[in-house]
Image (cartoon, rainbow, N blue to C red; front, top):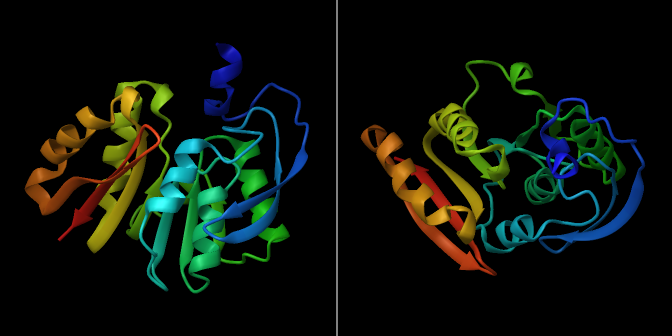
Length: 204
């Protein structure tokens, strides 16, 4: 079990053994580096693949957040699609952040900042949030994470979250609607694929 949960650690204890992968992210080919101790360290995770296939085209510009970036597939996809946007890739795992920076550099994506939460200015708000959130951290930590960042959507902003159906996506939708409900938010199921739900959170 410890092996599976290492990617939640700020400083993974496993050896940093990097390997190259060739991946396709929303139609863009990319060569990336992955490693141990980072979420889905040998492929594009299935949930991330579903999100990248199902989420609508991002705006051309704005301030975007990849919440729980891992080695960076979502941030890279956003960078390819929206080179004028300001993209923040957030993770607790320093190795993941290092890989995201490296992968952005390898693929000429110059608008990604890979950071921990305390490096994001406290008054920064976002036009778009994409996330394959770390469900296995447990419900309390997950809820705290989502309620820290979803309220930072700008008016007219949208978040897309991918969650496995058997890990609670259908109970998360009403929970989010209740938590965010009084503030002009609308929460709904946007798409379903391969046992995953893509949840849409819109701020009026």
